[in-house]
Image (cartoon, rainbow, N blue to C red; front, side, top):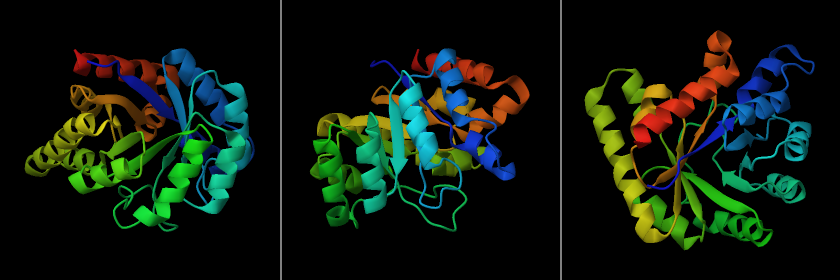
Length: 246
């Protein structure tokens, strides 16, 4: 199996900071601690409404961290301009709604194919690795391949929600979709990542899929950090992933 990487999302460190204003807790400090604890990459989502990560956070993250920076962004001209100036290792194109609490699903790559094409092309031309955050469907995967995106991140939210609510039938169905989609990435020549709503148990389970090479996890790790500290939550996540991979 390919090595399994852990990308730690620091958005919700910024959420806590912004709840009160000021500079603390600092998401850049969290990113540095995450790397020390075993993170292979740092993910941050610069939303159009700037509800957590802000422009200065992105600049400071790029300057401070020694691991790859994964810049989550909507496909807009403003975000494209910021990404091209920031030059992160990767950009993950995600959907955004002003009224959502968090990302509610995968990007509609089929319906937005023509809209997305120039964004994928321009980011790629700048040497930025493009990922598309998609639902685990054959149509979405084939469109991602047609757009020449080298990476997809499978949206695991529906599966994680079903697991959390004890709905085994739904959970089995959603995990089946993820398993089939992950397997399909190999024949399409696309690197497979996964994320959204993962905890220790679900991360352990999905880590067993050999095509998945990276998990991006944030909210759960920041929540666990309240009780055990951020470094320990990341170490325990890394342990769960390694167990699943074995």
